[in-house]
Amino acid sequence: MTGQEGKPHASEGKFIFPLNVTPNLRMISMGSIMKEGDAPVIWRGPIKLGVLRQFLSDVNWGDLDALIIDAPPGTGDEPLTICQLIPEMTGAVVVTTGQGVALLDSRKAVNFLKQVGIPVLGILENMTSFNCPHCAKEINLFKTGGGRKAAEEMGVPFLEASLSTPPWLTPG
Image (cartoon, rainbow, N blue to C red; front, top):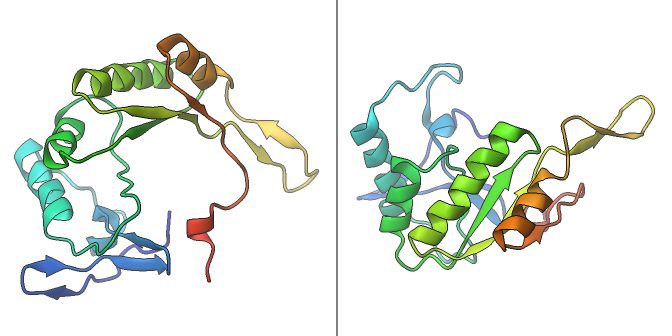
């Protein structure tokens, strides 16, 4: 998503340095360290969780205003490990799409976060529409409105999305 696949990370001693995508955005991912971009990562839980721990503890992030972790959907080992490894976490955003199955996962994620004591900053509905390159009309690709409805029913904020580029991705 950031075009950083296959770029090596620098390391010094025990620390790994993230890639600088823009002056305001640093990142690390499995995709950026894999030699072949289409190679599958076939790892069981303990190895995945070890890499996750390493990304959180051995990467020299520097001063951060926010740490965004794109975790797989669900309420399993990865989200639980993240919550345990970052005791100072001040909140989490649940990202969903408008389809029923995605909304079921999102509702479970909100309940999971509440149960482990992490404040839910809100639900964000993603992939609601795009501007057609031919006619410039906004087209709804998927069902929309489910994220807002889930947020209202669960008593958490609904976070409005914008089609504009977020400031942290703007070069400069």
